[in-house]
Image (cartoon, rainbow, N blue to C red; front, side, top):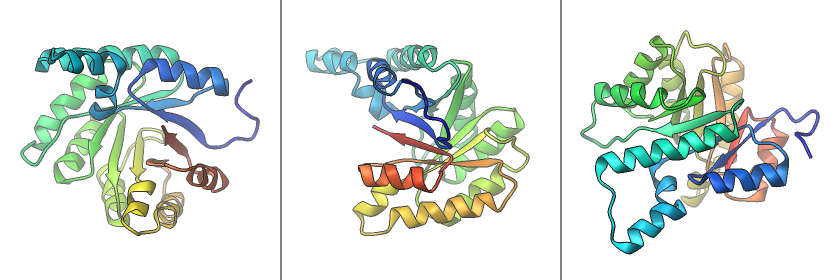
Length: 222
């Protein structure tokens, strides 16, 4: 089995386990990329076994483990994209995020660096685009955030910028996640196309099929 003719949407797996990458490729016959984050990598069976034994990772070890995981994933989807997330909290500056992003971007040849859509993350993304890096702007919950990403990444080439609106998390708080993400898609398609919509938090088959029907640029799902 291979990718169906006419399928316009790129399909990504949301996982921190290369074994799941292999499983999905076996089931579908293809995979266009993968999104990862520290939480997903912490669910990796090897990490879970270490946690269960009480053998905690040092800061260096956890970054080395994350690097190994995405390196293994990258080798399975060499023609696709693998998103790798920076660490950030309320105290993390734009320069700190950008420094992390520069390091992460060297881990594999097909990386998109994930930054949160907050002031520091947007500033780091602007620096990253100027440095010819690829970014995935995550935790998008409003059209205002989507507009802010577009503005911060002006001048980027198509495919250089992903924006990840979260469908399921909006549904969880009583909002219409699908309508929101469709509006973001329409807004971007009326622009210069330098930003692409990567629909995230697709938690149901209905979400997944609606994304395909609307020909979203990309979908990531567990």
